Image (cartoon, rainbow, N blue to C red; front, side):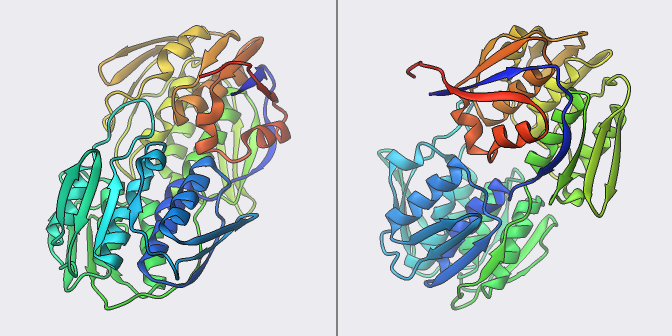
Length: 421
């Protein structure tokens, strides 16, 4: 297993290129199963999760090639509508194959997903959505067995505005007979990007980016060429890295419109932010001001930036509270930040933070993707050297993070930690 060795105290400066969105790429790759043929996808990030979904696609029978940031997918001979436990257990997003397989083949056998260690994210909304469209669902020995003749459009209300369920239902509904209305649909940019891809394939979809998405089923779809949006969470993480290190950076290739709430919080915390043709620029100016946040569904503050904000607030000039209303148990980073000297205390789904003058380097352990990012941020600001273990988590969502941070001046190395997990 690898670890990061980070010597803190160096302000980050320079430009960083933002990669394609992981959370947009994964469902778009699986959507290629909806119609046989050759697809060309651009701005695909080189990530562990992308490799995992590509492997799953190959098991189903697709040909997948990744050259630089372009993925070629050929689903002409995909004929095995099953996602096995041995693969699905490593990544929850594998559930995205359920809708496309059911819509194209009329059957699917998909293992119940695994993924991050920080708590359950049930798939009941996905299953209820498929049942609403006419599928018969059975759970058998840890597998979802789904069958249907042609799916039929239906009005579906989501009790929770779930990104995953919205995407899965939307993909399945493209080939359903009649019209599907998803109410309380997710509004996230990743769902909009998926919808735009489906429209390119010939789907009839209205209401993307709103709480009501209409899908009029069509008889068939066709392959297409498409580009993935920039990763808004990677963008926010690098902005936090610049601010916590007291630096100044420019994000290249990001989409500022997807970051409105995040940018507002950085400004409130004292950052100077400029949005121009060259990208988004952030300069740390003066002391970091304490700013409370409460996560919410888009366009609110994203839960995927909660851990990074806790790290930033750990050296703010005052006290703050961070509350996560999306996931109540996503706080594995708190005890690890305490090891670095942060004065943070979790109670329920909130973290109470009293900013300290300095953090101090220490060995810490990653437990999930965003917790890993928060530890990297804290280590960049800490006095001395920090060893961050189990960094395979961060490889799931941040492309070439060591190279990108080095380019900004960070003192960071990747090394074998000599440990077995």
